[in-house]
Image (cartoon, rainbow, N blue to C red):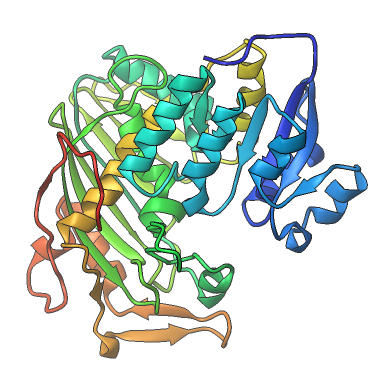
Amino acid sequence: MAASSSAAPVSIVLVGIGGYGNTAVDALLKNPLRQDWQLVGVVDPVAEKAAAYAELKSLGLPFYNTLDEFYQVGKADLAFISSPIQFHAPQTCTALAHGTNVLCEKPACATIQEARQMAAARDAAGRFAAIGYQWSYAQAVLDLKADIQAGRLGQPRRLKTMWLWPRNDAYYARNNWAGARQSPQGDWILDSPASNACAHYLHNMLFVLGRAGQAAAAQPRSVQAELYRANPITSYDTAAMRIMTDDDVEILFYTTHAVSRNSGLELIYEFDEATATYNTSKHLVVHFNNGTVKDYGTPAGQTYLKYRDAIATVQGEKTMACTIDSATPHIICINAAENSVNNEIAEFPAGLVYKMGVPGSQVRVMTGLTERFTKAYQSNILPAELGACSWARLGKIVDTTSYDVFCG
């Protein structure tokens, strides 16, 4: 539950203002939310490197290296946490322990045990711990989910999503954790397109299949994966997954950063009585078997909604659509995908990987990957199941019905 509503402005501490953290700053300052709020502090050990540093400094805000330093002298109703993945769980738990509600950026954390710790900290504090999957706050997604829960599309059968999205050297060089499995200190990060850059779209398939309630999400019963890399990283830049939910719905997910061209987001959600797609106008559209078409509008470009909703929830006016519980099934899928390949990422053959672009911003491209992933997507199978491929490695099926610990 959220803190009780009061006449005082909602006090907000920003945790991490570099990189994606600038989105929270923009939501508050450049696209002002018409709500009663007040910034009370910024936590970031390298704040001076952030694009928003000068603007925040000009507001006279105090800056801190750690959340503990902030709480020695301050307090807040709400924390926007946009720090590196390995800090999500400890910072969320620290904020909750001090009575602060939390909106943490996606992914919720790296491991299932951290997700459980975050949920326990939330329960102990009596505050909310929400996760910033922006599609979960878009009305188009919430309306589609409501119709699915009401049975208007019939029983779900298969949901699949593909995004082949090239990322260059600069993307992986932007910080010291991009593409990393662990930090130098041994903390799990598990950064990948499935856990980070394209995580929204894997999470959304689980989210819209939640049985009852706005924040519900489907639970994975099993996960089978293929994980590869073309880049010199310790995690993976390419993934294909088959997830079976506890309601026996198949979820297929395909994503990579090792291609030459951005395919754009493609999704098809199949039900007994209808099919949902994401069209070229970036709208979610459902075609019913009886010929009826329903356009739900676009879920894109509405990142400010999660910040608005968090403030409104503190004020007692809303409830958060995506909680730590909503996000935990995604974490299970990410962890189990690693287990599926025995925690060993397959290297694409060096002779099939070439560089495209100018030095410093080159993309490593795996020859034939776009065609193979596209064919697998169209055929509703994993790429290795197409056969006739020397580098393809199909992982084992991992039972996730009682998945509680990721050991790596």
